Image (cartoon, rainbow, N blue to C red; front, side, top):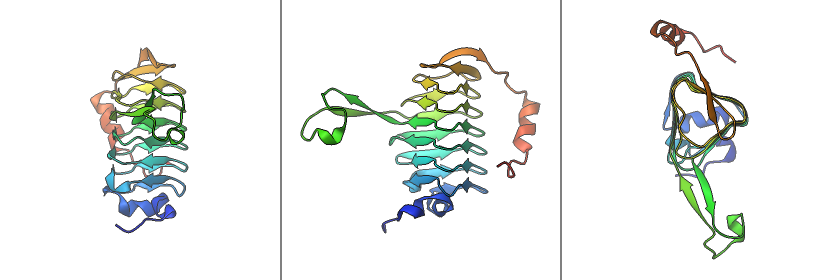
Length: 196
């Protein structure tokens, strides 16, 4: 495979490099996806400026989902984001974390020492979930259908469908009303192409 230049992985330039690209996918000019050959992005997805995604392992983003400014998705794990999901500005989806057992906290300072190992965990964000600004989602977490996560929440365990969560670590404070089948059908038929 020929070496890919920096700007070829940014904005609309990356669309033809995706494993799958649905119709009307909009990746804004300053968004970047590395390892796009592992990413599947469905119809009408929007990825706004300053998003950074490493799709290594696999990434799936469902229909009508929006990934907003300064969001990071990384970690060499499987990441699945359902239909109609919203990831607020500055959200971090972490498919891997370091487990340190040595003195130094950066791996490049510790040549020859066994100071850390990497913990990987697949992440699933189910349909209609909403994550507010600056949320952090840790490896191995499933966020249930329709769950709402308040700004600055730290999500280190699975969240129930249609729950409302806030805090660090995230705790349940209420429940969202699940839409009726009739309401869901209306939302699924809306024209979202002019949004943003």
